[in-house]
Image 1: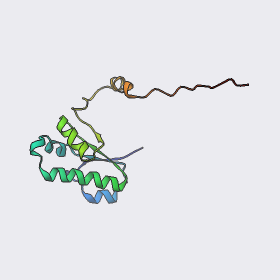
Image 2 (image 1 turned 135 degrees about the vertical axis):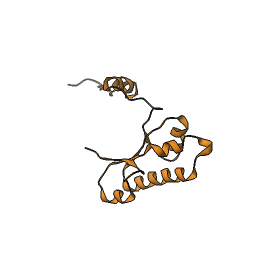
Image 3 (image 1 turned 60 degrees about the vertical axis):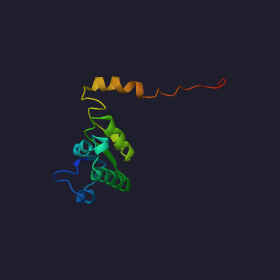
Image 4 (image 1 turned 45 degrees about the horizontal axis):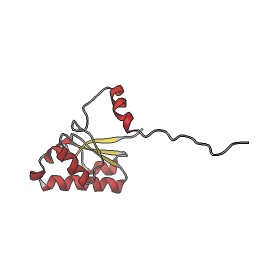
Length: 121
């Protein structure tokens, strides 16, 4: 089982939780992605906060998931800031499990085939 610290950066979440709780993933609140919506008008503090959270997560050995990705610009900016995992409508809408499996199957590499060289005696 893995645990995610959800909506990090808003509400009751604080830096002290990083020290107090045992978790595997920080889910960065969607409000940060929304502030990155317009590449020409990105508030430098939003960029700095995302970069800092990604760096803190790396030091702690946990993953970061950016929530609320709605544009290619947000996706590009977050990738540039070192965020490897993202979720949001730009990537895919919510869907039933069978539809997700259908979407992901072409991305899954085929299992390696066992080839025997020569003859077994």
